[in-house]
Every structure is written in structure tokens, then in C-alpha cells.
Length: 330
Image 1 (cartoon, rainbow, N blue to C red):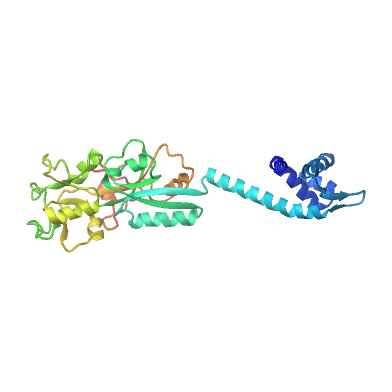
Image 2: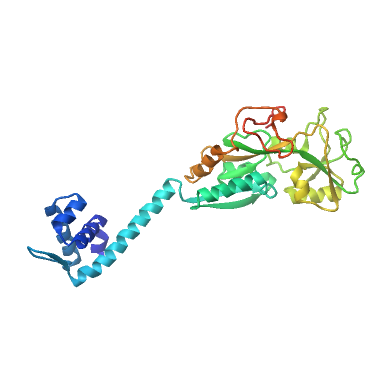
């Protein structure tokens, strides 16, 4: 066993080439080395193994029975070594690996995001995507602390330490219980909602995120009435249905969680939200570069700022020239 451990792959390759050529001169030419050096290396291999692999005379070189058996094993070893080197190189260069993608439970179904994932799987079949669901209080920490390599987030102001690429812009609506006194109105105003409680969130949830989703302050400068605490969309809508509060949600949430005991209504002056892909500036996962390269090759990467007129009113997808900005928000 000690002999095998000390054996160099290079020497095995020398032996394989000699066995294929059955001629030291031609083998030396293939290997681009001198014939005496090649002969010395093969003899050293035979000494180390304690068995003759070749018979030599002035006219020809032949494999011994042991040499034929060792040739089969040597080729397998060299093939395995090449596979080890190839796998390591692919991981190092980001051609193989895994990327952990985090999101809030109802945000992963956007067509733009699904199309991006489809393109990535086609372009990088050796990189696995792992999906993780997080709650309100986990963002943006789950990206910054490395629990996910990339996150689909709605942060009104991009946090420090993250790269941010907007994916889509979407209107927000108010969710109410079907028997709420305001449910009969087709369009609401903030005056209508002035005394209606709005759910609150854990202290770990970034304040800028809480303020955006609670619409605090309102256009008149007042703060909303605090309501029950919630941790995720399910508990949010359960409280809306049972406690008489109002929740401001992305428009697709009202469709994703369609319930007979809830209604959604547009609110005059309620700003849309931007959903973005984010990843930590210090992320060292080599595979992540393949994902971000794809982002930059498609319409998901934008720069500059523009008003809401640059957002398509039907698709709500950011056009290539626009990063929507609303009063300092995305």
C-alpha cells in the first residue's frame, strides 16, 4: 500500500503510453521527453511494484501478463484522476455547484422570475438551485448572513452590503374582510382608512420595510393605528379576516391567497412596490457568478431612475431603461 501511495500519476501515464506504443522511442516522442528518462521511469515503477510489466529486447517490447492487468487498472486510475481534476476545476470556476435562492412564500411565482430560472437551468445544468422560504423578519438578513446566496426581496430602500437587480414593479392594494364596513367601496382613500388598524411586525423586521408596508406615515403625515403582530402572509391575512384590520399587499397576493372572506381594493395614492434579486457583496460562492452573469445579459438589469411612466401598465415589468423611483423609494 505504501508503494501505491507513493506512485506518481505521471509515472503511470508513462507506462500506459509505452504499453500503447510498445516502442520506447515512439512513446518518448508522444510524451515529449528523452527515451533514457522514460526507460528509467518505467523501470522505477516496476521496482516499486515488485513485478515486471514489460519484456524488452533489441527488436520489440511486449507486455507481461502482470503488465496487461496493470494497464487496465492504470487507465482506470488516470481516468478517475482526470475526473477529480475536472470536477474540482468546475467547482472552482463556478461551472458546477449549487445556489441557494431565498424568497417570501408568495413571491416565487412571478413569471419574470420563473423565466429567469428556466433560462439558468438550460444554460448551467451542472449548477443546482435550492429554494428556501423565509418569513418577514428574516429579510434581508437571510441574504446578508449567507443562509441564501441570492434573495427575491422587496425592500423599499436597498440595504447596505447588497447588489440589487430589479425584476418587476407591481401595484399594491388594500385587503379587507368581506364584511368590513369599507368593503362595499370600489376604491378607497387614506382618509377612509385613517382609523383602521394595520398589522405590525417583529422588531427584527427592518423599519424601512415596516413603514413601507404599513404606509407610515400617510400622505397627511399621520401614522396608522397599530394592529396585531404578524410574521408571514398567512398570519397577515388571517388577522385581516378576523380582526377588522387592513393590510397593504402586492396585487398578486390577493390572487395567490384568494379567499371568500377577503376582498381587495385599490387605494388612491398607494405607491407600487418593486421586487428585486439581491445578493451579498461579499458572497464567495463561485457558482453565483453564473447566475448574476445571466441577470446582466437579460432585461432584468437596469440603471438610472425614472418615474412610473416607464413601467408598462399591463405587464408591470421594468423596461430596460428604467429603475422606478417613487419619492426616494425603488
